[in-house]
Image 1 (spheres, protein in one colour):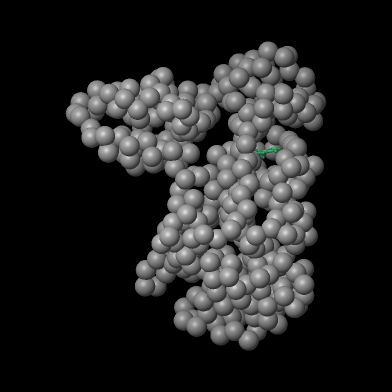
Image 2 (cartoon, rainbow, N blue to C red):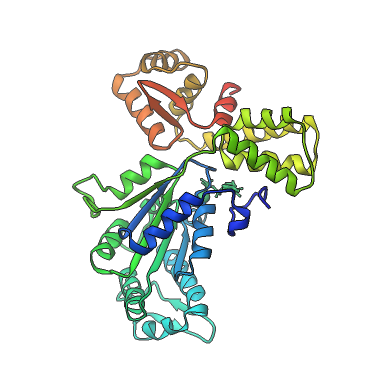
Length: 362
Ligand SMILES: Nc1ncnc2c1ncn2[C@@H]1O[C@H](COP(=O)(O)OP(=O)(O)OP(=O)(O)O)[C@@H](O)[C@H]1O
Ligand SMILES: [Mg+2]
């Protein structure tokens, strides 16, 4: 079902994205060791990644980093996520198991394998090295797919931070049969975390592939909705389709959300109702921003203050005190990195139209 609100896992449920799937295929066959998949929230990153992993028939471990956000950025959880991944792998590629038997801190049961995170001599690199050894002996490539990888910057171990980029860079240099796919919706934050352009980062200067996921154009959005409505056996009037397309500007997640709800209750009022709900979802995301300055800046932009000076003056008015140029720059820089806004020819714009509308009502 095109309007299934969960991330898609099968190609039949995925609208188009053929070039993106082809790019991932090529990366797996002959690309660099790391592919970075970038795209704003709800654009379809997880769906594309999952469809690719399901179809590619390649051994892979999928890590949803939002799990750490929910349950804590803990070392034990990282080991658990890896052992869960390995358990899935070994049901199909059974020969993997014997490679892990020799490692300290690995408990192998009848049905499960478990990594003891307390065992000092069992590092994440040991686990990756064993995967690589197996892959090399069996002419395979193992894909480590990390969704929302920028969140891994918060991972903590026994003595402090776990630097996942160090693990990736070692792997990049030494483990020829492992490849990483990392995604991120906070595009600038992910880029900073990976640090390909930062001389102090372990991954500095490494060659990587990049795949940018863009929104649907108007024709694709209309076609997506029509196909989805067709699947649920209804044919809404054109003005309804136009209204939805106008409101969500080609973002597949919102198209899916409106389509799903309209299918369940086809009526003109439902579009307005869902629009209001979508704005509440958007507002909850905005409220996670740590400071009032960010929200004021976003609201100023949504109200049409597109340039630096106008944004600064508006925030100052609302906060009732002056701000330094450096403060404003920092605020806008952070919002750019979080992919809430984009900048073109010195004008700032809210990327997601639903967020923009929600802000106007704050
Ligand atoms: N090409 C597509 N065809 C059908 N449905 C899609 C497509 N792309 C995205 N969707 C739908 O849009 C919603 C968002 O997709 P998905 O979760 O894959 O995006 P995302 O970029 O990973 O979002 P987030 O940043 O929130 O993690 C889901 O309901 C998914 O089913
Ligand atoms: Mg996702």
